[in-house]
Length: 85
Image (cartoon, rainbow, N blue to C red):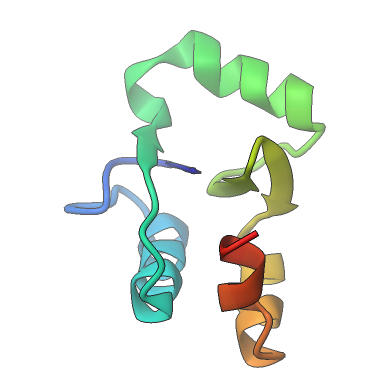
């Protein structure tokens, strides 16, 4: 599950767009939640994850990270395996 500003079509910020591009390139299906539509979720997720920015990627309820971490996973060839956990 990816929590982003906007939806995959169209994202509302460049970081969300880049994250969506990474996930699309992986070929692994994912769900998205537009945090701009629910401020309670937006603020609550920041506290829950102790991660202050969006997008945020979760796999099986566990925070994987934001765009920088996902870029690193993709560069190392580990993103697809992480998403398939």
